[in-house]
Amino acid sequence: MPFIITDKPIATSYVFDAKGNLVAAAPVLLGAAKDKDVIPRSAIEKTVAQTTKEEKVTPAGRFKGKIERRKSGTSFDFIKLGNSSLVGHIAYTGNPAENRLKRLSTPTADDNFISYGCINYGEKFYNDHIEKQFADGGIQYITPMSQTLEQTFEGIAGYQPTTTVVTSIVSNPQSAFNVSKRQAFVRTASRCA
Image 1 (tube, rainbow, N blue to C red):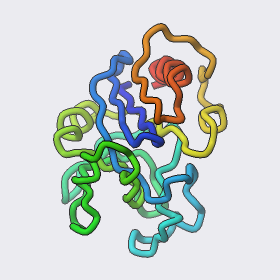
Image 2: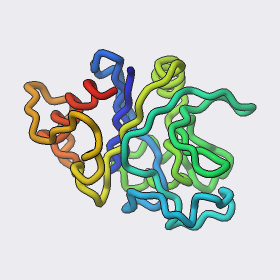
Image 3: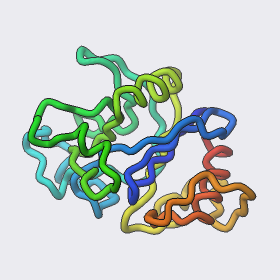
């Protein structure tokens, strides 16, 4: 299956085809609760308006999802929460004060933590690489901010953080998801997707 690795520490998503080839990468917007990797129980049955900043979490983990059609367009739905979902969608611009589109174009990830937990993509990136590639389903991997990769992904069959891969996919030193672990993770993800 195709898969996405969303590297939370650098707020970037990497899209891979079903053979494990890197197709595209772009900055994303993530949940405002930047340092949390698990959605608090208190957030599960709340509406968006009732959610506190501490509950606006983009959770770390492995999630299976697919493109769903809505009145407002499409989204890549990957987590069901009570009566709602966490999804990947085109950046929400309904609140101009949040400057979401501007945040996607800044040079660092410092201001990319603004959403209610959903992953917000630039429109062209979403249309070209998410909507088409994941119409029949795929996997969303989200790396952790505070947990280790081992804590987050230990239940995934075949995940071996010491696996060696010859070529580097990306090498951004800002990421806590360091190069050797990233290489091992991408190799494992392509086997598990």
